[in-house]
Image (tube, rainbow, N blue to C red; front, side, top):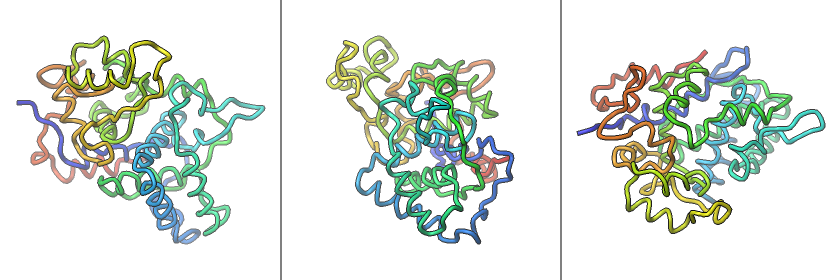
Length: 305
């Protein structure tokens, strides 16, 4: 019988995104310990209130961080509006009508500015908010390394080319993650962040109507809110994890084993009766958590520059 990862450190490697920064500065967990000693408490308070108001916001903040980091590093460029000198990332295909939480980031930044004006970068605010979101929704805690510099420009073209679409096949996913220095195991673990959040009909329409490696009952359920015709119900939402869409757990991986991955790109990680083998890579992590050493989990959690 196929197994799936249940070690929280394995399924929550969204934290690896902390270390995709393009900044040459050395990141440190105590970067603001003197200049803004109440930074973490300030950020967490706003994030907690936002998630209490709307549980989905935790996934939205985590997704913002992911999409920021996959375009020229974790530099906050996704937060920038268009200017006369550049066209930003907010309107890129992966973000248009889907990236959200900008207002919450603004609220966090305002609270941080009140506590310590002109000290903390927006990029670091987003990194902390992503971590806090995972923790508040039941995931593990980790130390966030800080000291990122904010971007002064952004690129819509880079976002369109750099963020893997939900239609990606396995080789495309592996290639894109490898280009950022992330392994196939990192790909699987980072994808586990899809245990929370929602997807738009446009992201899974082709899968529920055209693909056979999908649980028939799930396909039928999703068709009820996602019509076949393009342009009809495009923005209708469905949970990525039907069971616990606001709990950070390992149901995402259980769903893949049962062919209940909502996105094509997700089901690519487990397609059939066992882990896919691609170019010698085991795509689905087959190791039971009881066999994962604390040292191995720790390396994934603390991997950095």
